Amino acid sequence: MLSERALSRIVHNRAARTLELSPSTRTHVPGPKPGMRYMLYLHVPFCARLCPYCSFNRYPYHEEIARPYFEHMRKEMHMLADLGYDFESIYIGGGTPTIMMDELIRTIDDARATFHIKEVSCETNPNHLAPEYIEQLEGRVQRLSVGVQSFDDTLLKQMDRYWKYGSGDEILELIDAAAPHFDSLNVDMIFNFPSQTEEILKTDLAKIEQCHCQQVTFSPLYVSHATTRKMEETLGKMDYDREYRYYQMVDETLTGGSDPAFERCTLWTFNRLDPTSGQAQDKNLMVDEYAVAYEEYPAIGSGSIAHLDGILFVNTFSISAYNEAIDEGRMPLMGEAHLSAHDLECYDFLIQLYHLRFDKRAFEQRFGKSVERALPTELAFLRLNHAFATDNDAELTLTPMGRYLTLVMYRQFLSGMNELRDQARAALTGPEHELLFGDGSPA
Image (cartoon, rainbow, N blue to C red):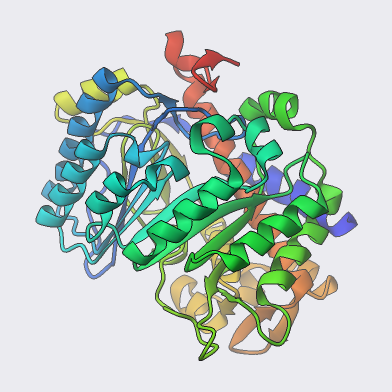
């Protein structure tokens, strides 16, 4: 699709210019702004198996490394408390946050004792949906997000997930057993794997419809330079020409027809509808992309990225350097990416469209100018491609094509964030410099 290729290139080039990492000399991130709501992101980088497409900071799990890491992460959390931060929500991502349950529980309980936490979201893998894990998470975690990616056994084997996490049918059973124990159990899926056929995607969608999850995320596959070779070796080369068709399949299957099972929450997050009322079971379910709900957010842990005062603050990707910084009483900041006023306008525009509705008046109130004056080229491109279902003085909403074009923009933005992570990893020396896969063997 010509518009997809043009838009991908434009956003890729802009992200490359914007997300340029420079060294940080700060010992702490800026303090909180009066009256602003904050959430806290915590990064746990350890995994039993390292996926071929993942660019997040991650390391093979070893207890002797992970246990002191959790202790240092809690110390970094208290540094934020000392700066005056309070949080109503925390999101724990990875990696695999549930890989060391006693330390995870201690960290959640510490956060609840320190801040006014209303909700906790946590990522996990299917093998941690076992009863002994669920018993500890229930009541502590309101939203559990399970990284499934696909129920297809051939794909799971190609991704090196089958032998560790079980077959697609086994994963489905675990999801159904775990779902009643949480306010929301989200199933995190990916579409447009190179070796994924339409039949595989149809089967995945059918299993999502029949399972008991309250929410599903179907994101497109996006990679970085560092993961491309390994992914192509295991899954094949990317084919963006079929991405639009696959996205249509996801959207139409989940939300189409006279009796849909889900409704759209964002571009690629869908909330299950109550079959008796036709209404969302809970309209306040948190989504994976926490930036949608929070304008700014601190982040802790090795390889985490905070967004504060128009700056992206990147923590060191080195576990040893991370621990050393905390022991010295400073935050482990290794780099910063400064966003211009125009960058922030583009970001706000993208995030609002990702959430399916753009509020023109809120944009003007925040930036002191209309979106027409701030982003004339972007609006002209989207209008030329019939992206807007509603386009008046108050708001923009999206057509099916508009949703896809926004997906392309957001996919490329997230790919740019992966490139930012690549820059941070490139600054490392020694064994930590290698981006590892599988059981920890070099790529």
